[in-house]
Length: 285
Image 1 (cartoon, rainbow, N blue to C red):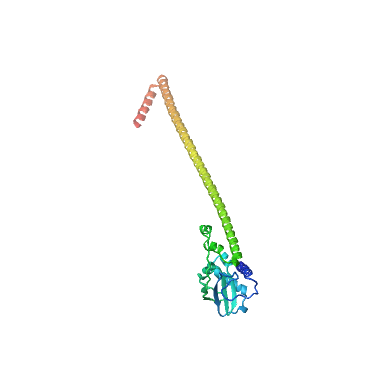
Image 2 (cartoon, helix red, strand yellow):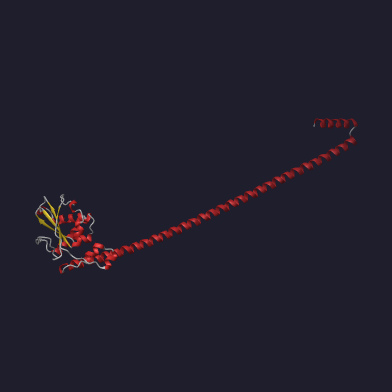
Protein backbone atom coordinates (compact mmCIF):
# COMPACT_ATOMS: atom_id res chain seq x y z
CA UNK A 1 0.00 0.00 0.00
CA UNK A 2 2.86 2.41 0.80
CA UNK A 3 4.53 1.49 -2.48
CA UNK A 4 1.29 2.06 -4.42
CA UNK A 5 0.76 5.45 -2.75
CA UNK A 6 4.35 6.50 -3.51
CA UNK A 7 3.95 5.44 -7.14
CA UNK A 8 0.64 7.32 -7.23
CA UNK A 9 2.45 10.40 -5.93
CA UNK A 10 5.10 10.07 -8.62
CA UNK A 11 2.44 9.64 -11.32
CA UNK A 12 0.63 12.75 -10.04
CA UNK A 13 3.92 14.65 -10.15
CA UNK A 14 4.43 13.48 -13.71
CA UNK A 15 0.91 14.60 -14.58
CA UNK A 16 1.62 17.97 -13.03
CA UNK A 17 4.60 18.34 -15.33
CA UNK A 18 2.60 17.05 -18.32
CA UNK A 19 -0.34 19.43 -17.75
CA UNK A 20 -3.86 19.29 -16.27
CA UNK A 21 -5.49 15.90 -15.85
CA UNK A 22 -8.47 16.81 -17.92
CA UNK A 23 -6.46 17.93 -20.99
CA UNK A 24 -6.50 15.62 -23.97
CA UNK A 25 -3.29 13.70 -24.57
CA UNK A 26 -1.60 14.55 -27.85
CA UNK A 27 -1.61 11.97 -30.60
CA UNK A 28 1.77 10.39 -31.40
CA UNK A 29 5.03 10.00 -29.47
CA UNK A 30 5.48 13.63 -28.48
CA UNK A 31 6.16 14.72 -24.91
CA UNK A 32 5.08 18.00 -23.33
CA UNK A 33 8.77 18.83 -23.40
CA UNK A 34 8.62 19.34 -27.13
CA UNK A 35 11.37 18.19 -29.46
CA UNK A 36 13.47 15.22 -28.43
CA UNK A 37 10.63 13.17 -26.88
CA UNK A 38 10.28 9.41 -27.30
CA UNK A 39 7.50 6.91 -26.58
CA UNK A 40 6.78 3.23 -26.05
CA UNK A 41 3.22 2.04 -26.68
CA UNK A 42 1.57 -0.85 -24.84
CA UNK A 43 -1.85 -2.08 -26.01
CA UNK A 44 -4.09 -3.83 -23.47
CA UNK A 45 -6.81 -5.53 -25.52
CA UNK A 46 -10.12 -6.40 -23.96
CA UNK A 47 -10.15 -3.39 -21.62
CA UNK A 48 -12.01 -0.09 -21.89
CA UNK A 49 -10.54 3.17 -20.69
CA UNK A 50 -13.84 4.35 -19.21
CA UNK A 51 -14.18 1.17 -17.10
CA UNK A 52 -10.86 1.42 -15.22
CA UNK A 53 -9.34 3.75 -12.65
CA UNK A 54 -6.69 5.48 -14.74
CA UNK A 55 -4.46 6.40 -11.79
CA UNK A 56 -4.55 2.84 -10.42
CA UNK A 57 -3.85 1.53 -13.94
CA UNK A 58 -0.76 3.76 -14.23
CA UNK A 59 0.37 2.73 -10.75
CA UNK A 60 0.20 -0.95 -11.73
CA UNK A 61 2.35 -0.24 -14.82
CA UNK A 62 4.91 1.53 -12.61
CA UNK A 63 4.86 -1.35 -10.11
CA UNK A 64 5.57 -3.84 -12.90
CA UNK A 65 8.46 -1.70 -14.16
CA UNK A 66 9.84 -1.40 -10.62
CA UNK A 67 9.59 -5.18 -10.22
CA UNK A 68 11.65 -5.51 -13.43
CA UNK A 69 14.50 -3.58 -11.79
CA UNK A 70 13.92 0.07 -12.73
CA UNK A 71 14.88 2.57 -10.02
CA UNK A 72 12.47 5.06 -8.50
CA UNK A 73 14.51 7.99 -9.86
CA UNK A 74 14.19 6.70 -13.41
CA UNK A 75 10.47 6.02 -12.92
CA UNK A 76 10.00 9.64 -11.78
CA UNK A 77 11.16 10.81 -15.22
CA UNK A 78 8.69 8.52 -16.99
CA UNK A 79 5.27 9.83 -18.01
CA UNK A 80 2.34 7.50 -18.75
CA UNK A 81 -0.56 8.58 -20.94
CA UNK A 82 -3.63 6.44 -21.58
CA UNK A 83 -5.67 6.48 -24.81
CA UNK A 84 -8.82 4.69 -25.80
CA UNK A 85 -8.92 1.87 -28.32
CA UNK A 86 -8.87 -1.02 -25.94
CA UNK A 87 -6.35 0.76 -23.69
CA UNK A 88 -3.17 2.18 -25.20
CA UNK A 89 -0.55 3.21 -22.65
CA UNK A 90 2.14 5.57 -23.95
CA UNK A 91 5.35 5.67 -21.94
CA UNK A 92 7.00 9.06 -22.55
CA UNK A 93 10.40 10.30 -21.56
CA UNK A 94 14.00 10.89 -22.64
CA UNK A 95 15.69 8.39 -24.94
CA UNK A 96 18.00 7.10 -22.19
CA UNK A 97 15.01 6.22 -20.01
CA UNK A 98 12.96 4.60 -22.78
CA UNK A 99 16.00 2.64 -23.96
CA UNK A 100 16.07 1.05 -20.51
CA UNK A 101 12.30 0.48 -20.69
CA UNK A 102 12.60 -1.29 -24.06
CA UNK A 103 15.26 -3.57 -22.59
CA UNK A 104 12.69 -4.94 -20.10
CA UNK A 105 10.34 -7.86 -20.90
CA UNK A 106 7.32 -5.60 -21.21
CA UNK A 107 5.07 -8.27 -22.69
CA UNK A 108 5.32 -10.31 -19.47
CA UNK A 109 3.80 -7.63 -17.20
CA UNK A 110 0.23 -8.10 -16.03
CA UNK A 111 -2.15 -5.16 -15.49
CA UNK A 112 -5.80 -5.78 -14.65
CA UNK A 113 -5.08 -9.48 -15.44
CA UNK A 114 -4.16 -8.54 -19.03
CA UNK A 115 -0.70 -8.78 -20.65
CA UNK A 116 0.07 -6.02 -23.18
CA UNK A 117 1.17 -6.05 -26.78
CA UNK A 118 4.29 -3.98 -27.34
CA UNK A 119 3.89 -1.69 -30.36
CA UNK A 120 6.88 -0.45 -32.32
CA UNK A 121 7.59 3.27 -31.98
CA UNK A 122 9.92 5.65 -33.76
CA UNK A 123 12.43 7.30 -31.46
CA UNK A 124 13.73 10.80 -31.99
CA UNK A 125 17.49 10.77 -31.28
CA UNK A 126 18.67 12.76 -28.26
CA UNK A 127 22.35 13.29 -27.57
CA UNK A 128 23.32 12.73 -23.94
CA UNK A 129 26.39 14.24 -22.43
CA UNK A 130 27.75 12.78 -19.19
CA UNK A 131 30.11 14.81 -17.04
CA UNK A 132 33.51 13.28 -16.07
CA UNK A 133 32.50 13.49 -12.40
CA UNK A 134 29.42 11.33 -13.10
CA UNK A 135 31.55 8.78 -15.00
CA UNK A 136 34.06 8.73 -12.16
CA UNK A 137 31.32 8.08 -9.58
CA UNK A 138 29.90 5.25 -11.65
CA UNK A 139 26.34 6.72 -11.65
CA UNK A 140 25.86 5.40 -15.23
CA UNK A 141 22.27 5.89 -16.42
CA UNK A 142 21.28 8.20 -13.53
CA UNK A 143 24.10 10.66 -14.21
CA UNK A 144 23.43 10.50 -17.93
CA UNK A 145 19.78 11.35 -17.41
CA UNK A 146 20.64 14.22 -15.07
CA UNK A 147 23.00 15.77 -17.67
CA UNK A 148 20.87 15.34 -20.83
CA UNK A 149 21.29 18.24 -23.25
CA UNK A 150 17.72 18.70 -24.46
CA UNK A 151 15.50 21.52 -25.54
CA UNK A 152 14.38 24.48 -23.54
CA UNK A 153 11.19 22.68 -22.49
CA UNK A 154 13.21 20.00 -20.55
CA UNK A 155 15.19 22.43 -18.36
CA UNK A 156 12.78 21.98 -15.43
CA UNK A 157 13.03 18.19 -15.76
CA UNK A 158 16.81 18.42 -15.89
CA UNK A 159 16.92 20.58 -12.74
CA UNK A 160 14.62 18.13 -10.96
CA UNK A 161 16.88 15.20 -11.95
CA UNK A 162 19.93 17.09 -10.73
CA UNK A 163 18.22 17.75 -7.39
CA UNK A 164 17.33 14.07 -7.11
CA UNK A 165 20.92 13.16 -7.97
CA UNK A 166 22.24 15.51 -5.25
CA UNK A 167 19.76 14.03 -2.77
CA UNK A 168 20.95 10.53 -3.62
CA UNK A 169 24.57 11.61 -3.25
CA UNK A 170 23.76 13.15 0.14
CA UNK A 171 21.98 9.96 1.18
CA UNK A 172 24.99 7.95 -0.01
CA UNK A 173 27.35 10.14 2.02
CA UNK A 174 25.08 9.81 5.07
CA UNK A 175 25.02 6.03 4.65
CA UNK A 176 28.79 6.01 4.33
CA UNK A 177 29.09 8.03 7.55
CA UNK A 178 26.71 5.66 9.29
CA UNK A 179 28.71 2.71 7.97
CA UNK A 180 31.92 4.33 9.23
CA UNK A 181 30.33 4.88 12.65
CA UNK A 182 29.11 1.28 12.74
CA UNK A 183 32.60 0.09 11.82
CA UNK A 184 34.06 2.19 14.64
CA UNK A 185 31.48 0.77 17.05
CA UNK A 186 32.30 -2.72 15.82
CA UNK A 187 36.02 -2.12 16.34
CA UNK A 188 35.30 -0.73 19.82
CA UNK A 189 33.21 -3.78 20.65
CA UNK A 190 35.99 -6.05 19.35
CA UNK A 191 38.51 -4.18 21.49
CA UNK A 192 36.27 -4.50 24.55
CA UNK A 193 35.84 -8.19 23.78
CA UNK A 194 39.62 -8.64 23.59
CA UNK A 195 40.01 -6.80 26.90
CA UNK A 196 37.40 -9.06 28.51
CA UNK A 197 39.20 -12.11 27.15
CA UNK A 198 42.51 -10.83 28.53
CA UNK A 199 40.88 -10.21 31.93
CA UNK A 200 39.38 -13.71 31.85
CA UNK A 201 42.78 -15.21 30.98
CA UNK A 202 44.39 -13.23 33.82
CA UNK A 203 41.74 -14.41 36.28
CA UNK A 204 42.21 -18.00 35.13
CA UNK A 205 45.97 -17.64 35.54
CA UNK A 206 45.50 -16.28 39.08
CA UNK A 207 43.13 -19.15 39.89
CA UNK A 208 45.70 -21.64 38.58
CA UNK A 209 48.45 -20.03 40.66
CA UNK A 210 46.27 -20.13 43.77
CA UNK A 211 45.52 -23.78 43.10
CA UNK A 212 49.22 -24.55 42.77
CA UNK A 213 49.92 -22.68 46.02
CA UNK A 214 47.20 -24.67 47.81
CA UNK A 215 48.63 -27.91 46.47
CA UNK A 216 52.13 -26.90 47.61
CA UNK A 217 50.86 -26.00 51.08
CA UNK A 218 48.96 -29.27 51.29
CA UNK A 219 52.10 -31.20 50.30
CA UNK A 220 54.21 -29.34 52.85
CA UNK A 221 51.61 -29.99 55.55
CA UNK A 222 51.49 -33.69 54.65
CA UNK A 223 55.28 -33.89 54.73
CA UNK A 224 55.38 -32.21 58.12
CA UNK A 225 52.77 -34.59 59.50
CA UNK A 226 54.68 -37.57 58.13
CA UNK A 227 57.89 -36.41 59.77
CA UNK A 228 56.12 -35.75 63.05
CA UNK A 229 54.53 -39.21 62.92
CA UNK A 230 57.86 -40.83 62.20
CA UNK A 231 59.48 -38.93 65.06
CA UNK A 232 56.68 -40.01 67.39
CA UNK A 233 57.06 -43.63 66.38
CA UNK A 234 60.78 -43.43 66.85
CA UNK A 235 60.30 -41.95 70.30
CA UNK A 236 57.86 -44.70 71.20
CA UNK A 237 60.28 -47.36 70.01
CA UNK A 238 63.12 -45.75 71.94
CA UNK A 239 60.97 -45.55 75.06
CA UNK A 240 59.97 -49.19 74.64
CA UNK A 241 63.54 -50.34 74.24
CA UNK A 242 64.59 -48.26 77.22
CA UNK A 243 61.75 -49.73 79.28
CA UNK A 244 62.67 -53.28 78.31
CA UNK A 245 66.30 -52.61 79.10
CA UNK A 246 65.46 -51.12 82.50
CA UNK A 247 63.02 -53.92 83.22
CA UNK A 248 65.62 -56.53 82.33
CA UNK A 249 68.21 -54.87 84.51
CA UNK A 250 65.72 -54.70 87.39
CA UNK A 251 64.86 -58.35 86.90
CA UNK A 252 68.50 -59.32 86.89
CA UNK A 253 69.13 -57.32 90.04
CA UNK A 254 66.11 -58.95 91.65
CA UNK A 255 67.31 -62.42 90.74
CA UNK A 256 70.80 -61.69 92.02
CA UNK A 257 69.36 -60.42 95.29
CA UNK A 258 67.13 -63.48 95.50
CA UNK A 259 70.02 -65.85 94.93
CA UNK A 260 72.08 -64.03 97.47
CA UNK A 261 69.29 -64.22 99.99
CA UNK A 262 68.71 -67.86 99.19
CA UNK A 263 72.30 -68.77 99.86
CA UNK A 264 72.19 -67.03 103.11
CA UNK A 265 68.79 -68.02 104.53
CA UNK A 266 67.26 -70.97 102.59
CA UNK A 267 68.23 -74.58 103.22
CA UNK A 268 70.32 -76.56 100.86
CA UNK A 269 67.53 -78.78 99.54
CA UNK A 270 65.44 -75.77 98.57
CA UNK A 271 68.30 -74.41 96.55
CA UNK A 272 68.71 -77.70 94.79
CA UNK A 273 65.04 -77.79 93.85
CA UNK A 274 65.23 -74.22 92.63
CA UNK A 275 68.22 -75.05 90.47
CA UNK A 276 66.39 -78.08 89.12
CA UNK A 277 63.39 -76.00 88.12
CA UNK A 278 65.66 -73.54 86.32
CA UNK A 279 67.31 -76.33 84.44
CA UNK A 280 63.95 -77.74 83.39
CA UNK A 281 62.83 -74.31 82.19
CA UNK A 282 65.96 -73.98 80.14
CA UNK A 283 65.45 -77.37 78.59
CA UNK A 284 61.85 -76.48 77.72
CA UNK A 285 63.03 -73.30 76.02
